[in-house]
Image (cartoon, rainbow, N blue to C red; front, side, top):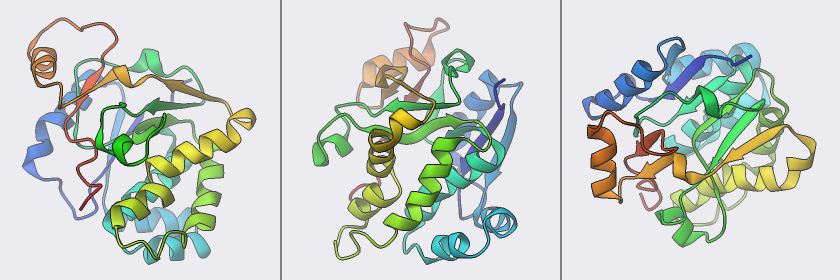
Length: 226
């Protein structure tokens, strides 16, 4: 059974118009899925109902919007199940065939800016799937609390969020607990980077799906040095 819920987040309210084509492509190729857009108030409502006490206090205490956004996706997937997708991903096909386990993760492309700063085979938190009450999501939620005060002395908020709530965090959780959970990890080639300009243009503007690519990630890592 696939939990056919699509989740996206824009904390400040309706997303900017620049994401409209990306959102429409996600809906177009997943028209049998339920679409849910989360803002700050709806996330607070979810936390108040399902994760009162230390977790909602933790979420409120995050100093940056990106940490709040990163952390919220674990709570959302744990509660509802489904696919979380960043707003800057443009889809060129349906990805039901990639949902092969209770939790599905993707590796980050080795040429993106995050890998230049933290070299190694890293997972991305820009898109991932989990069933409702998934064990790996439960581990991530509990570990968010344990990691919330680490790296607080670092002056770069992007570095802090990377290691406490984002790709570095989810990579560490997977490496530590992969023997205990049902997780499939797919390669980065399913989502091209915007840096591959000519190939991305061809993918977006052609009717034929090329190889295994499912979409184009328009701005990977742009937040890192914000």
